[in-house]
Length: 219
Image (cartoon, rainbow, N blue to C red):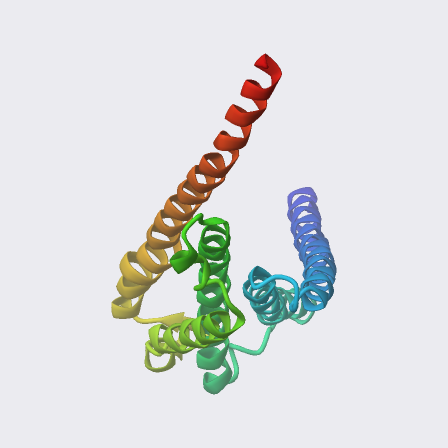
């Protein structure tokens, strides 16, 4: 009996830890993203970059709603909905991938915009505009929706375990292309290049001022 009691106690502790962990993540994430949304929404006319970050935070909030909230419900009631509805099983995973892709690539676009608006070349600065931002966001959302389409046919409810699972074919697509390439390697490459170019551009614009200041002090 002591062993059974110990196992039950450990299971209870694990369940409570998961529950409160999910709640903390959901509350802090939702509050943080909501505050960012209000901040960036007030700066839409001042900064083109705010548009990219605003869309990214909205996507992050949607991700929290469709991942963490069902997880909390699953811990409390034992089911989170994807086990009983094939449609929700497919749509849930589809929306998660769309939101992650949109959030990741709007951050990349924001980084690229920082470089464009700091460039010393007028031909580059003109690309940092509201019109370009709106079209870029539209394209990113459409591309994200297209890349996540395999979620719809390849997620299903396993008849044995009664859980929402994906096929082996989709897992390869997710691992080697969607996650590794489109969510990790490619964004890191874009962020690295844009960050370096922004630093170089700002450094080039500051250097002449430093030279003039030193010459003035010598005189």
